[in-house]
Length: 164
Image 1 (spheres, rainbow, N blue to C red):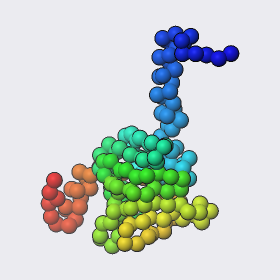
Image 2 (image 1 turned 135 degrees about the vertical axis):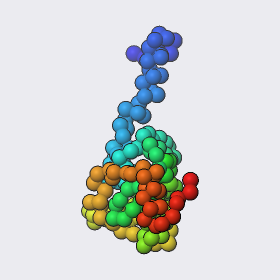
Image 3 (image 1 turned 45 degrees about the vertical axis):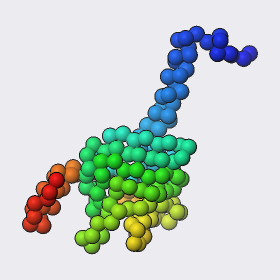
Image 4 (image 1 turned 120 degrees about the vertical axis):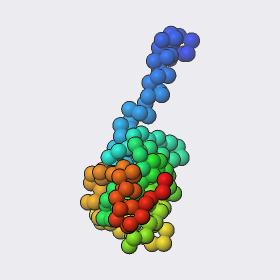
C-alpha cells in the first residue's frame, strides 16, 4: 500500500509537517546531551545556556547564554552571550565567543578537542599554545557568574572602573 499526497487530509498533512519541524528539537533535548552524543564532555558550556541551534549538515553550532559570564575550569573562562563553533565528533573548531585566562592574559579559545577519551584529557587551542586539561573538570556544567558582577569585582580588585 502506498500513500500519495492526494489521499492525505489537510489535518494529517499539517500534523506531518509539524512533526518534521519538531523532530530536531525532540532528537536533541539540551546542549549538554548534544555534546555527549558528539563525544565531548557535558560541562563545556555553563549552566545558563538559554538556547542553541545546531545544523547537522554543516556542523554549525550556535549557543545563546542568558548573559555574558565568567566560569572556572582550571582557570577563569569568559563566555560571550553567543558562542559559535563548528561541531564534529570529538571537537569544536573555529570557536568564537570563548576566552581563557592564562597568567593574567586573556586568550581566545580557537578549538577544543578530545582525541582519545581513554586518555582522560581534553585539548584547548588558545592560538599561541595548546593546553591539556583533565576531562574530569568538565563532568558537570560550570556555574557561570553574570558579567556585571564580574566586572564590578574585577574593577574593585584592580583599582579601576570598568567602562561599558
